[in-house]
Length: 415
Image (cartoon, rainbow, N blue to C red):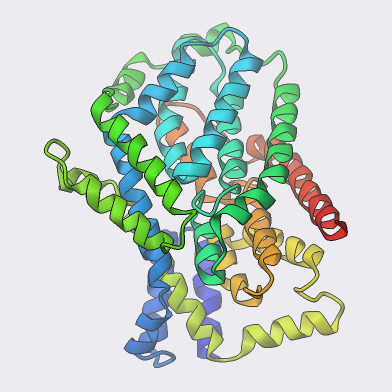
């Protein structure tokens, strides 16, 4: 019973993201839950440490170092500024933003792409008198959808790939078609929804605070062609290694080690951009779920669902359950709980879990960390994206994406 109480309190905290009178965030709740599992005696220290999937953590860490190379080299900022200078047709610019976000997110993790691109796009658009909201929503939606295409696009895909030992190539081949269709539908919906609303009203454009925008832009690193080129070179090497038998976490750590051996880029600067909060969140969730597993309750719940006609082996059920849970506690915690019930012997089930959890992240603001990053970074530039504004885009896009996934699953089964 104590494990269930700790699990429920932790997941409620993660779902709400805060607690009155306390400055706890989602990572804090996960860490407290893990501590409670150990201090209550549900897990001993050895069991808690063994619960952490070290391979997933190391892969995440290595990719964060690679992304830090691009951030410090100014590559993200340069790319965002370059596309921002080419606003001729707003619909075409929206397409470029979404395609760029999807591609970068598939290769360099969506959370970091959103963190790097949002302030640059927001400032450039506000200075030009454009309404940033449709473009920033397009950035968030496309980064989520695009990240579903590869096993390194987002944290939940990394976890599924490591736990179920999925190969990089087959995952990409199976997931890319529904990702492309979902991305096209998302673009079409946003372009139609905001037709005629790409420009800011004259009074709104006049109220944009130039001092705030200058302060935000002052933090952007200038493009360092050598450092950015080095990052691109080693990204190519890493992608090539992913198609070999070398374990992904070993490949990522090897590339991170090479990047740390720099005459110009300080190790402290690179490591300072590693998202230790996300790594801590992962470690805490591993321990919480392991504590709950010792009770046998998750298995009993899955057996109860199967007895009532909702077996997780049914990919339609898996899609719906994953989408629903992802929007209760966010997609990373949802996958942490569900991946144990997806057999490694059936790779397609892992693909479905990855796509469903990632597509579902677009539904509402708390569905994915990428959404929250865009909303918070936009607020720092004076752009407000509320729950309802996001839902106008997120709900239809998510429903359409999940329908595409279900249709693709049925088509793949029939071939």
